[in-house]
Length: 262
Length: 273
Ligand SMILES: Nc1ncnc2c1ncn2[C@@H]1O[C@H](COP(=O)(O)OP(=O)(O)OP(=O)(O)O)[C@@H](O)[C@H]1O
Ligand SMILES: [Mg+2]
Image (cartoon, rainbow over all chains, first blue to last red; front, side, top):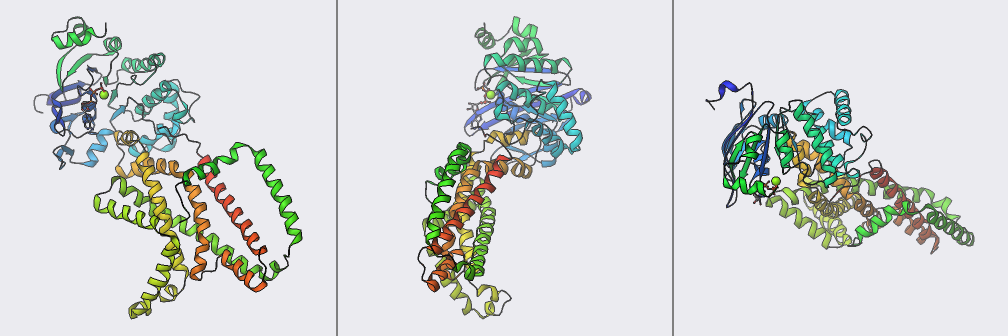
């Protein structure tokens, strides 16, 4: 951690040599990735290349087998979890870090038993300790921002996928995160609903939000990302600024991968 | 014993019935009232005034038994269901065994084993006879409460096991990803979603619980059924007391449905997958 100590104020996420094994299957084979504040890092790669697993290791939803992780300049402390992986050593610390890294899931994962507004205030009130009234104000404002003005009291199951995903993004914003982790936010949507969600993500990029975005939307990655990372077989095969990355891919694998999208 | 695999169908049918058309319900009521009036006018009902206090006492006992044993049973059912989903085997296994044994044997047998077995074992220990609890343990109702509670806990433990397992891991991961503690996740996401899933089944099961209560008459507890039985013995009337308590059971059942439908309609939720 010594070499980038000086950047601590601009660095948001720094992951080093992340390994993850599920039984005999080694899904991540030493991934290095970092993001500075304001970066939009797009992760692309084939199915099963470990993109989701990596994202889930960043907030310890999955326990990495080995590696080190620094969030906002703070080293995540690990201890062996007894199953051969690393569990967070301090529950306090990991809960605090998780609340700073809001995640947006492929299947939205809004809490089904709560209205949208209740979904919005859950984490602010019960994790961050924001006064309820203030959380409600903020929740309403964010739902309005993603175009759900008339859906505050609706239950998630009554909404379209696009509406649910926009609500899920608003829910992530409600904790005013240091960085947002998106795992294929549009993959579960009907094609005609993809645009409305991408528009919201675009607006977040425009206001300088730090994001790590796993996606299959190449055109969007090109537009929105400050850096693109190609995962292959559990390692970062290639990375670079979008202009070069897409127009001049170096590795054969990336060339082949990108050719699938043209 | 009275609870069968059809429970789920029965209960969901019962719960959804009110919404399927109030005209059907109204016609039903009308027929019932006319028939009841016709029958009632042919029968003797003067005994009600004499036996009113007895019947009232029995009714109160029945209602309290249903409420107390359902609430206690449900509180027990939550951990019984939960440990079978996430618990270590040394908790999951006994919970499973408990459910299997209780559900696999007649409630009548359980009540008798508790009352005549346990109840007659206790006096052989002087320290129990001398304890503060003895005046309570000498009575029949603790065994009725225990038996009915265990029965409800076993059936609902099984129902909740399914309900807990049915809540998607994604829902819990969403909680974790925002830094909620495991305890908060359980209290604020997992449990409420599981209970909501189980609600329609629980309504039906609670009616079955009501209909199981007459068994306590066999261990000398005076519920509304045994009150009616006493009336029959002393008045030699065959049908009237039975008809009266049938009506009472129906009314309590409707009350149970009403309570449960209030619970589930206050939160109009359609739980996905
Ligand atoms: N909990 C788990 N237990 C066992 N294997 C798992 C688990 N989670 C993921 N895997 C395996 O790890 C590999 C990588 O999965 P991952 O979901 O990270 O891929 P991905 O890059 O996100 O793919 P996709 O584009 O399909 O989402 C897959 O082979 C998957 O089967
Ligand atoms: Mg994935």
